[in-house]
Structure formats: structure tokens, C-alpha cells
Amino acid sequence: MLWQTSPAATEMEQVMFGWLRAALGLPPAFTGTIHDSATTATLSAVLTMREQALGFEGLKKGLSGMPTLRLYASAETHSSVDKAARLAGIGQDNLVKIPTDQSLSMKPGALASAIREDLAAGLRPAGVILCAGGTSVGAFDRIRECIEVAHAAGLPVHVDAAWAGSAMICPEFREMWAGIEQADSIIFNPHKWLGAQFQCAVQFLRDPTPQVKTLGLRPTYLETAGKEDVVNFNEWTVPLGRNFRALKLWFTLRAYGMEGLRARIRNHVAWANEACEALRAMPGVTITTEPRLSLFTFALADDAATEALLNRINDDGRIYLTQTRHQGRYVIRVQVGQFDCTRDDVMTIPQVVAALM
Ligand SMILES: *Cc1c(COP(=O)(O)O)cnc(C)c1O
View 1: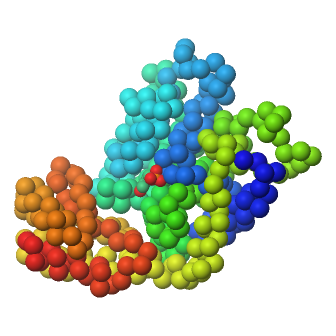
View 2: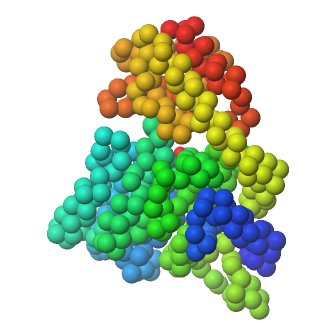
View 3: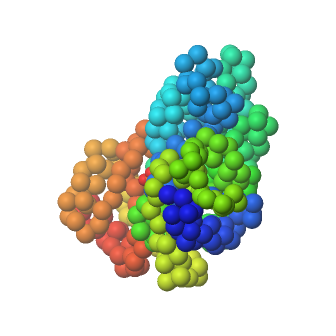
């Protein structure tokens, strides 16, 4: 609960932040905390945006009579952003979906105009949520340009890299989120693609002060006696009692080493590309989105045929694929990321598709 109830848990979490920051190439200014899920971390970031926009008055007075707040994200962002807007009392209708360009990145110019129009209409912009590796087809916003627009308007930025963040331990992929060092908050899930056990969602914060001011309460019974300078992570997150999640990270990082983890991610990306090329070569198969890291999509001639194929694939049981809708089309998602998968496992995908088409 407090530093005092388990100094080791707190200190280990801080040490893990140092390791992860270095692993991802983030500047030393970033600190952070570990949540159960990206959803909770994004909710924490959005609650913080709400309170910053309201001068921390919402916490005291509630939201009735307060200005209408506005959040901005592209339609490629995960539904956890919609959930956060709903739960934070901002409302789905005030989450403005900014149009994307050909490569599915938020248009910085469109973001700037949306903010301008809202200000002119007497609404109050509160923050921007950017996408670094969207769930549907792996979309990346242009992080640097969008942050510049947001910061010019005085708005904080939260970046959702829940899935793709793990890949940033490999320097060659960091170009995909160039400009990330200016983000105010970043979420990535080591439980998704770094091999940590489930419920290990890491939120980096450039300055924890506004989030601690939003989520922290310190009654006398929650004081760490005689220690003013220690971190009490319960003030950074929604729950009071917390799991010792840093231990899972420590085991993972120590057991496999950064080079071991990088090798896994590089293999997943290479094998996904190989499987994609094998599918592309099959008559009747269209690659509908090119591989972004280890995620791509494909389809057959029409939606009915694609859906029927997906059902046959999953009924067959050797592999498991999911579906999404892309530019109006029903498409099949291929995503490689299971910790211990092999090249043979991944190359089963084109074999199964060929057999069941
Ligand atoms: C999986 C995912 C989430 C949600 O993660 P949880 O930890 O399950 O809440 C959010 N955003 C993206 C991009 C994801 O891939």
C-alpha cells in the first residue's frame, strides 16, 4: 500500500523504471508506475487531463456546471480511450475522432483545426491521446507533429503503445514513434509482447505531479512515518493496495536479458513478414494492410468468403486468427507475438490458409 508497508516493492518498481527507460531509449526525466492494465492507465491519464483542464476543481465540486471538456484521438485508437472518456465523465460525444491520412496517422492539421473550432465554440480542450500501434491494423500517429500541435495549444498528450511499445527495445523500430520523448504520459504492456505475466501495464510520466494531484489522497493513516521523500505509488494509481508487479518484470528481464528479448521481437517481426509474403503469393488472397511490426491483415475476394475462411481456420484449431474491419472491408488479422513461438509455428499460417481456402 505504502512505501512503509513494503519498501522493497516500491524500490524495485523504481529500479525497473530505470531499466525500462534505458531499454526503450527514453530520456532520464521519465518516471512512472505499473498498473494492472492499459485501460486503467489510460483512465488515470484522462482523469488527470480532466482535472488539469478544470484547475483541479472537478475533484472537489463534481462536474455539474463545469465547462464541456473535449478530448482528441483518431478512430484507430483502442476502445479503452472511449471507455476512459465515458468513465471520466467527459462523455463519448466529447471524444473527437480526428481524421487520418492514407497511412492511418492522425492529420496534425486536422487536430489543430478541431481544437481551434472547439475553442471558438466555447468548449474546453483537455487533452490528446495518440496511437502508437493501433489494435485493428497497427496504425501509428505522427507522434512528433501531433505533440507539437497539442503542446502549442497547452494540451497534455497520452500515447497508447500498449502493444507496440515492447518493440521499442529494438532501436531500429524507434523511428515509428519518433518524438515520443515529448509525450506527457505513455502506456505500454510488457504483459503483451515482452513476456511478463499478465497484469503488467507500465505508464511512463514525464512529470507525475498532475496525476498524483488527481489520484493521490494522504490521510494520516496512510502516511509513511518520518519519511517525506519516499514515493507512495498508491497516490499515482486508482487502487490503494497493489501487487508486487515489478517482481515479474525483474524476473523477465533477468531471465532473458535485453538481447534475448530483442531477438524474440525481431524474430516475430521477420516471421510475420515471411508469412505475409507467402500469403501474398497465393492466388485469391489480397494483403489488405502491410505488416506493421508483426501485424498485417488479408482478405479474400468478398466479405462472406473471408468470414467463412476465418471460421474454417479457427474451427480447424491449429492456429487462431481474429478479424477487423478496414476501410469498409472484413479482413483477417495475423499477429505474431506469443513468447515461445517458433518460425515453424508462424509458417503454419500460410499452410493452413492454403489447405482451407
Ligand atoms: C491491448 C490494448 C489495450 C488494452 O490493454 P489492457 O491492458 O487489456 O487494458 C489498449 N490499447 C492498445 C493499443 C492495445 O493493444
